[in-house]
Length: 402
Ligand SMILES: *Cc1c(COP(=O)(O)O)cnc(C)c1O
Image 1 (cartoon, rainbow, N blue to C red):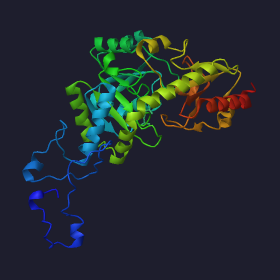
Image 2 (cartoon, rainbow, N blue to C red):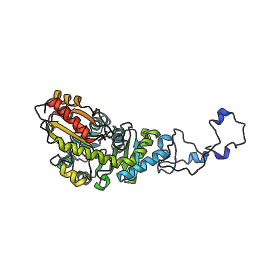
Image 3 (spheres, rainbow, N blue to C red):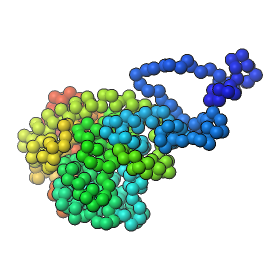
């Protein structure tokens, strides 16, 4: 089948039936078209002859070499994610975190420094502290709401600045343009974690970033059932650098996982807007609750970095965090989380089910951070918003008596 020149003819029955299960002459008629792209599965990729095998190329996405290095299915998903993000080149990775690792390993060497916002996604900070440090790559933190602290932190050793809008858990929205400008004025590349924006809320490359990573695990998957990441670039040589390291690290993604993401992408914008509407509705309502001290949602006036959100974004993800009245400690906050009926307890987000996670900011960010103590992050799913409101109301009343 793969070598039509050597294929046994329909009338040739010299081959055993077992052999024919492997070398079957049937080929379906060409020209089949459907709404969803085909799913191609392969570790081994076959070539027509020795010359084609020797001449194989894949880096320019103009051919195939090995399943790990790309199939029609992964190329198709790469193109769609690049389009979603407004970039040109995309590498798929087995998780959002591995997309972050890929950028770090592709762009940093011993002796270099990477700068992270102090509210960065926790595992990203761990990677800098516990893995990159061992490779001779140092890191420093800056305050994303104070671009001046980034300017001060930049040194001749800085090779990469990470931007995360908004910060994980505490949701501060930075002035992305100002951070990019500070990094570029020092000749440093900027990578942005675009998981929250998802290619819907704002266009990362229009704001000047060099690399955008996206945990496809979240809204692009939309089901809470797939782990995948993407690294997107606009610049061809930067895209090549990323792809080169991607191939050496062996970062493959499964065809059936690509299939799920390809199936979910066409509805992502509508889902994002529905998550956004419900989350803003509930967040606004919660600002009036007596037990709630702060609702951390970048689209709410008064939230940290709200002005930046307004100047950059046309939408917001369905995420926000609650800080409770200071008289309440972890015990009451845990009681609130345990009393919730419709919110699942678990990390990650982007699927249909609403989720809640209790955090201890003092342990996460250290005693000098602006926000301290217990906090609950809510991810608003696709349930009816009045059911979620009633559930939150009964859990607040059970935990805080108000
Ligand atoms: C979830 C998440 C990641 C990591 O994605 P995984 O697929 O879970 O590894 C990275 N960054 C942000 C902002 C996230 O929310």
